[in-house]
Amino acid sequence: MTDLFGQHLHAARVLSLANGVAGVLSAAVLSLHAIGHAYAQLAGITSKSGIKQVDRLMGNDGISLDKLMSAWIGHVVGGASQICVAMDWTDFDDDDHTTLCIYQV
Image 1 (spheres, rainbow, N blue to C red):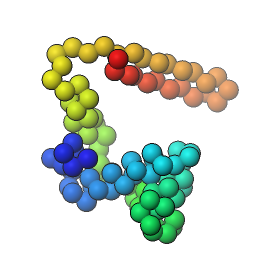
Image 2: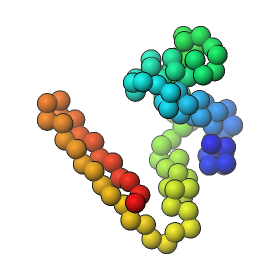
Image 3: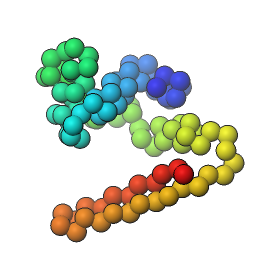
Image 4: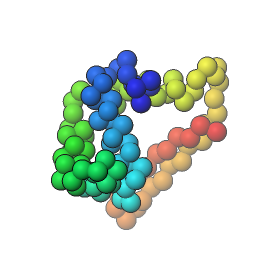
């Protein structure tokens, strides 16, 4: 995370982002509560502290997805001059929810 986002974010924000990712990867459900609880278990802290940290991460205006995406795309694409992607568009009619995913092939 530091190598990827260190030049775009303060070190404390990089650590916060890394902790949030660890929580996401360990959580059974993608909710703030579940991610915070999963992170707390990994970090050996109370669930309340983990949930609070994830909540603050999500509300942190200093972490801009727009700024981080250029670094992430550069990391994924690397030095390739061309890439092939697959797009998956799924509409969930029952709850009026749509998901668009783009995968590098």
